[in-house]
Image 1: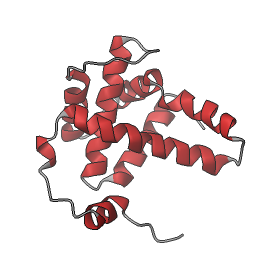
Image 2: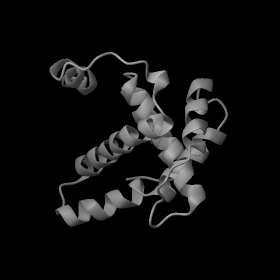
Image 3: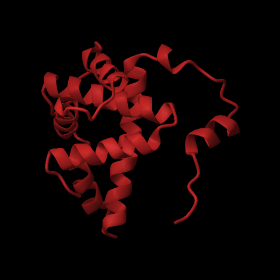
Length: 149
């Protein structure tokens, strides 16, 4: 297996980013970056599963990145005993309860808020260097909800 490069450390070093206290970030800021990291995880799995035309890759990816799917996975992880740490559950709740000025076009307000909580958790894990944990939670969320790519 090839040695992996920690992209977070590489970006921070290359762009000379100052160290920040992650606990000071708003849940919506965490969700902003978490949405993209979650998307990268899903796109990576989709591409690794099969070399397909881009429109097929997109259609498959959309099934997993939409708010409804994220909301189902988030609630399943949150409800499963012993899966999330106390800190992770707190980050999820903060993201879920954050007051956003936007909503998803094709999602209920409840699903959108749960998805935002999930994205905040993924963003927190990414920004604290816990990318492996984020990937594991995505996998567990898929397994608990019976989803496969």
